Length: 353
Image (cartoon, rainbow, N blue to C red; front, side):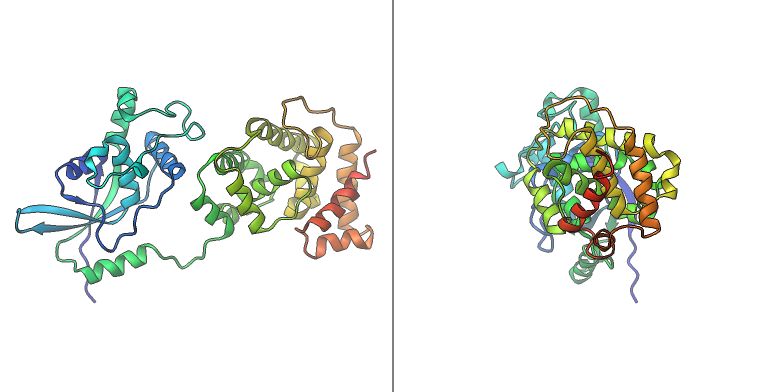
């Protein structure tokens, strides 16, 4: 078995820019995919660079052009990241630059530098971009095309199939996706402390899926959760998410209220279950703001004193199975469909006049 001697190093964006200028950086070798990033994805990645956050490793192969005696660098993996940055910093450095390469960072990703060309950025921001370092693995000139193809295939495959939320995270980069990610992350301690999701589920973005599911019902009323519905929700609100600021505020208010009402005792209730957590959240949202209500900013209603009593009584009733058969069935079978969610919600809501 042949072992490839890979050099692991760091290169700044300014290094890649210099190679692109002199024609020694090959972004489009035949085994690379064509550039397909949407403007939203480019904006999201540029914000990553501006914030100094880590990015995936760049893989390049060095080879010598005997006719010019120059070292060429073929991008094995990382073409879209490099193309995005080079197109933003210096479009003329890309020999095949086109209008589809043009983009600006969006306000949802970085309000400070939104809609600003590189040349108009403050000096410190320009230096941050040019000085940003990519971890880079350099393949030696002895690596053959066949080996590069094998490596490229491995880099773009995984033994773990992506779930629905991971696929949405990879496809969408607009206002809705960014808002759901931010809201889910803000509540990370609560997701853990309340035992609603496990660390393994968090590692696969399940808390973001729950946040998205709750937001869907805040907007549309009680709605069954399917991956297709969530996909369409992300697509619909990717360019613009009307009511984003107010709905985000309301989401936080409901989470705060849930903690105020149940406190640490929530872990002794049924609401550590995602099924029942959904019901409790929408129950409180309806009392505070009203399902499907206008997203015009307004204060939350006063929470009835009976709300806490209802939540605790419902928890005990479910734990002892002292509930109508239809309500119990709404937990045991197809618990995420619209009808059964509505049944559970009405059962809890009826406890508060």
